[in-house]
Image (tube, rainbow, N blue to C red; front, side, top):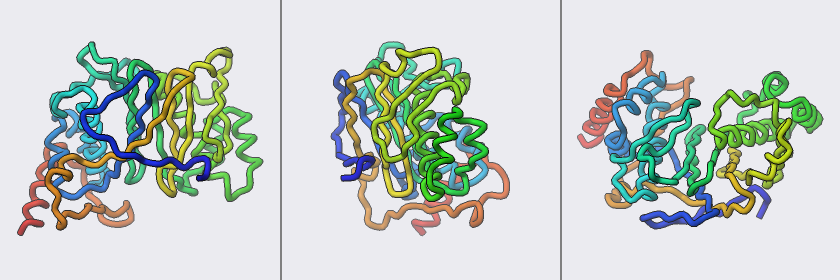
Length: 293
């Protein structure tokens, strides 16, 4: 098996985390319509409003699917219904469980049609996934964002490997700052990560903080063909477990007629005006009625 490959296992609810465990979940954001309706019913009005801020209907659906999945998984660890999970945010916008008692830590990332969730008990965790798109692997962005030695290594690579290396570096940096929970207040050029996209174990160096590299476990992996991802967790003896998420609603109510909704890209079908969260919900209902005849 090549270094970045992982095997996605299944897990049964209720979910349990042992000390040192980091659970990384893979989910598809292309859900059947009835599953999307169920996902929408789990979200708060604030979350639906955020979904409605996306210009394209495809992105609204993916936001709803991703955040409903976060609620279902969080609830699985907490032992409560998904709709009862309450989140709060720190001063930099990182979410956490609002009850003040749980030691559950988590992070969410999504790109294209894929979402990744990372969960740990009592230690900070961050995850990032990116779809590898050659047109977005811009060397000027690298010069403006990455540390000088990272950019130099990137420019020395063969042209056909630069896009993957660019996104490997990007996801490693994003996973680290998301684990820190400090947002963009941590400049991306003030710390350094190994840039070789084929390395699964990532080496970290932080300017002025020589002990910081010993504080974290950082792992790069390839969740699906065409994507690259990284997970970062506090501690030096982390045990990463890679798990496949499937919507429990579909598992309970399996119907062969269900099919994923695929919304075309910006070049195809899209909304010409923005929709509110409530408009998104009403579109679900209209589409479901049309499908059921």
